[in-house]
Image (cartoon, rainbow, N blue to C red):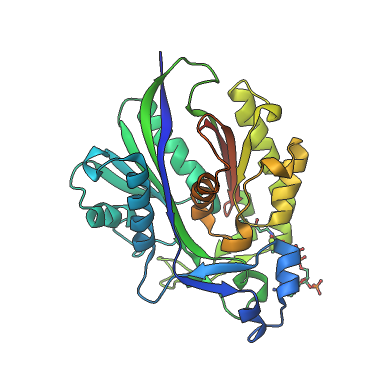
Length: 323
Ligand code: UT7
């Protein structure tokens, strides 16, 4: 008998305001055609004034709990992946804990930018396998619209706001790759690449700052590192790309998504794509894609998933799990 961290609930939340590419044409030297053809993005959601990351996260958490048929008292911990926390402290996770009315257990944030959800899932998996927790709410939530430089056309058209959440629960497995749950993980970072994607402000500098990105340089790293981390996770699980029912990639750019799938030898009919509707929602993109993939009837119980992400740091990683 082996302990496994199994997904028993999933949910998401998107702010009401939808911004089509055409809205940027009025203020920037850009076109719907450029944004669509270079990134695959057609629209994104932006949070309303006063609507913060923990609000988005709370909605997604409630949806995941309802999907799992659980009450908040059943949860031992909340891990929230975000780079756009409401306040410097306390963590957005503790704000979600309070909003949900959860007075037991513990809650904390994880910051690994676009790879944040993969880092959070891996952390939750370790806590479940060690016996520290039985049920963990893992959330990815972001309000990247708050760190956009609206005069920088090379970044501000690419990002959006949103949240997604999973309930991970300890269940017994046989210790084989046929088990449901997380089967393997792979995390990486290389801080030498800081200047490729960063925010030029922060607490120590007493400014919020704006996102800065050398997009084409990040692109160069992305396909190779994403395919490589996915292959490492699959190998650790004793599986190959042929076994994969769904790649659930971080949704940054359709060309990166297609390039990674091609490098792995997986057809696009086995890839969950939501980038056209959400833009890049950083740590929220993977749980959003999982929730929408399930709602569309694509992801079904027993399917083998590999999820992968790369972002600022650079930080990247992947998870192999059976749904
Ligand atoms: O999630 C975290 C990880 N982030 C990513 O994975 C993002 C990775 N990078 C990308 O997705 C792509 O590199 C971008 C979509 C950001 C850019 O696409 P690209 O094909 O790499 O374009 P580029 O940066 O090489 O720019 C090509 C041209 C430039 O003009 P020149 O120098 O060739 O005259 C840019 O100034 O496109 C120009 N450009 C734009 N034109 C119209 C840049 N942004 C825009 C824009 N509208 N919004």
